[in-house]
Every structure is written in C-alpha cells, then in structure tokens.
Length: 346
Image (cartoon, rainbow, N blue to C red; front, side, top):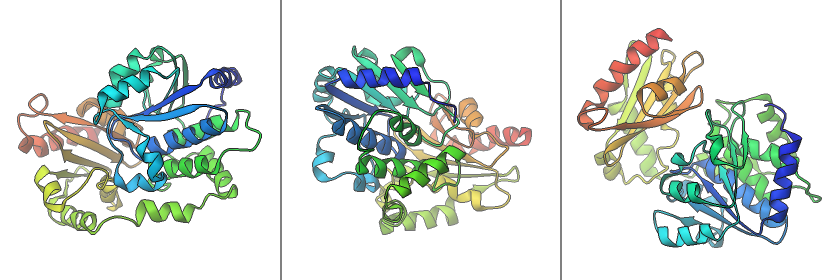
C-alpha cells in the first residue's frame, strides 16, 4: 500500500470536524466489505463528535451479515429500493457523503442519481481500478490493498482520535477484510496482515466473526452447494469451471440473496482449474462472479466479456439477454466460446 497523503488526511479531518449530518453509501448488493467499511466508519464518526450518521443502501444486505449490527441499528439503515422518497429526502438533508467500496456512482444501483446530485462534500474510499475521481471532492483510491475496510482502517488510524478507534469499528473492519479476501485466500498484502495483527491485538474476537461468516448458514445452502457441484458444474480442457444457477433452482432451494456467496471459489480447489465463473440468473440478466488463479486476469475477462471488472483475481459483471446472448439457455455456449481463447492466451 502506498503512503497516505498527509494533506488529504488533514483535509478529511477538516471536513469531518465541520460536518453535522453525514451519509454513508456503498455499492449495490452490499457484501461483507461494503457493510464492514460502512458500519466501521459509522461508529467512528458517531464517537468523534455530535453528529448524525446514516447508512444508505440501494438494496438490503444479506441475512448472513445481520450479526454485524443490532436490531435498532439495522432499522436505521435507509434502503432506496424499499422507500426511495424517504431515502432521497434524508440524503438531501446531509452535508457530507462518504462513498465506500465502489469506484463510480453507477455501481450504487438506485442510489446513483442521488449520489450524483448530492451538493455537499463527497469523499470516496475505495480499492477498485479506475475511480471516477471527477465525482468526488476528496478521493482515497488504492488498488494494492485487500479491501475498502482495510483502507478505511489505515485512514482512520491517521485521524486524531484520543481514545483509539471504537471496538465496534474494529469488529466491522475485520469482518470486511475477512470476507473480501475469502478468509485470506486472495488479495492479501503485507499491509493486510499488519492491519489484522493490530486488530487482534486490540481485542477483536476473530473466532466469533468466523463463526458467523462461515458456520451460520441454513441447511438449504449446503444442499444447493452439493447439487451445483455434482450436477451443474462444468469443467473444460482449457482450465475453466463454470456454474449457472437458474431462478428455478433458487426457488426450489429457497435461497436468499447472499447465500451463494463464496460458491465461485469452490472449483478453484481442482488442480487443473485456472478460472471459475459463477452465474446467478436474475430478471433479464445473469449476475456474474469470476475468480482466477495467479497468471489469469479475472478483471480483464470481466471487462472484455461480462460488462464488469474488479481485481486481478476477483471480479464480477453481468451478462444480458438479448444484448449479449439471445436467451438464458445460450449462456453456457457463450461462456465456453469467450473463455477458451482467453485462457489459451493466458
């Protein structure tokens, strides 16, 4: 991780000191890093002075992340898809907006227009490639880092806070780092281990966090996982594995949003597999997740073939019909056609 510019830290301190009504927004389909960084920042800001701090989401977080907040806290998160009018009114009343874990407002779903139209100070804290710096008044962007949660931690450490960071912030930040690295299996840098060592030394209960993240799923998820690996997963001689999860299977197993998190990583345990692609069917498109082993760029594959992008070995995107494929049944043929030359090239 590059050194954080002291001038930017000084400006951030000044913005926070003058702010009284602060909004925090993150990307569509919020994951552990999005929620971890948002909740971590919220607790920090609330302890740093007499301020009102609200989290704004496009859509609801997965139930698997509900352990990160108590019932009262979760009730105070505004979700645009569920009440856009109230969300818009509350966001307009804020004087400062923190945008976490996305590089451009277009990644924020139904919040996009409200973020673009926001007239107060806008601060970005993100780790994705190609930030839209023109949209923000202050831009913290670093790609050589595990997660937005880790970046937030390094930034908060440099702010004046006499009694140290709140315990609730540290818990949320470690949760974000853990999920975005797939429990330290990818995107891990020296700064990542340094930060986590400090978090553990500060008293964060990592065993409790791991229990919630990885050992608190419903039986339905495990049965779906078995079905996908046995009956649905396809492997190719080019070193690809792909899984297409249909809407019918989602309904049959009663799967909720977030319960397929991590499925894309499973095929990488096969020695010959160099890249894994996971598609989940939505209305009019497939949500795409891509993971790869070193030497294969998941980011480039997502950018060139799946209307997306991300990190070198962890990326995502979308596959639309009829724009990209004629109908959902054509997805398998499309995946094999575009990835075979891509993997042979790699």
